[in-house]
Amino acid sequence: MASRVHLLGFSIVFSLCFGYGLFFPLRRTDAGRGKSHLKAAVSCATCEVLVSYIQSELASNATLDSVKPAAIEFCNYALTKEGIYAPYVCPGIIDLYGPAVQYVATQVVLNPAELCVDFKLCTSNQTAHATRTRHLAPRELPAAPLPHATHNEGTRGHKADGGSTLTILQLTDIHIDPDYSEGSAGHYGDYNCDLPITTLELLADTIKALDPQPDVIVYTESFPQSQYYGQLPLYKEVTQQLAQYWQKWVNFTDISMETVKRSACYSVVIPNTNLKLVSFNANYGYVANFYSYLNDVNVDYFLLLDWLELEVDSAEKTGQKVLIIAHVPPGDTSTHSSYGEFYLNLTKRYGSTIVGHLTGHTHNDEFQLAQDEYGVYGVVMVAPSVTPYTNNNPAFRIYTMDLIKDTLLGYDQYFLNLTKANEMAALKQVPSFELSYTTALEFEKYEDLISTYNYNKHSKSNEAYKNCDITCQRNILCAVQNIISSKLLECEAV
Image (cartoon, rainbow, N blue to C red; front, side, top):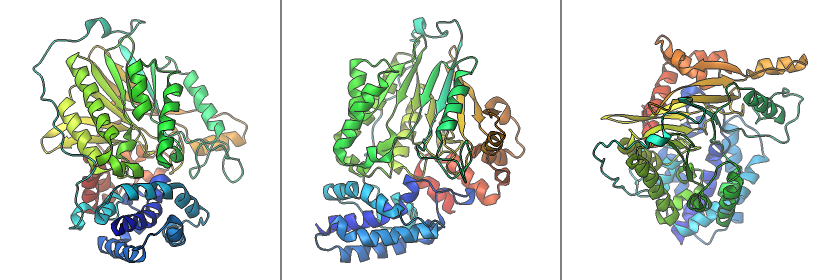
């Protein structure tokens, strides 16, 4: 019992305070991607001292209420160190996520040093006590089959209108702020706020005016966190509602409907194409989803992994190609390393079948290479957000796929210059989204490539992002080259 009390206290004080940056991403400098100044100042030794202190304080049957005052004080201290004074935030964080942490603490005993690694307070090579024993046992994927010529000829090569390309619109992280009001903030938004309704309406008008219209719309959005991290039965209720809601746009089979209800995942073959779209619930690999710490005892989790492997494997056997969509990219610092390890193995085995990986979550324009020392097996695309929060211009993306060659050709990236849009609004003028760049043209030149990448990463929100010093360059290369979060942090720490 003492070890579980230890976990409860440690999780509430550490996870709910330091984890703030995972729930509501703080603005990060490129020199400190994935790490706040406070995190950098807290060593693994300090972490273990704090754990020992909490253990001694909570050696008896502690309750959430008994640790709440200390947790609030520590949370306020953490935010102050970030330059944020918002005393109303911490009580809400602890009230919202505390019950989930308390529930998990009663179900499983975790290694505190490992939690320090998970919440990015130190890297795995900085502590001798962190062991990687949870979340995912090594999995044997089926051996690659012999080459075959099954291509489903009746469904590939051309759409119903005779075209040989497919256009895919991706929207992610819209994050509407229903309470947004003009004043100190502009009409179309502010870099420190989520999206106002006026900008969403402008986006909708822009999409309706696209010519040609996109063939497919992919929505890699995040939902309000209370839906994911409240009491466990609520999650099941949410998946039931999602199944009914999504059925309006996706014609689910009975089997697919049951998969959505169970795990918020589904697959669907795009009509008149050879492409299977597979939507994967990445919250199982998300550190800030406290229920993910139950993965090793969660039957649904292993069924989900089996389902994803089966969907890709069946596509390979029938000559189809697969496009995987998910909210959280596997290489982000807010994910369990086991998520990246599984994803790398899946991509390594089925790299010739999976034609693309579309994600969001970071609010930035990025990509990650699924690679190891033997080669590169795929590219995980991370699209920038519609919300301007975290200092980005609102953005959306349109991919083009060659249906004859079954390959993604590239994408066009669009953005709204928020500063210019607010200035135009003051003059009673209507702004418009602009083409930011086209991959075929943007990355064919090598001079200042990383600076261009960094500027685009923030959707051209600030000219200062064109200046990418040696630390900035190192962190970009670390993020691009590491799809496993622990390896990313180790790379950045060098």
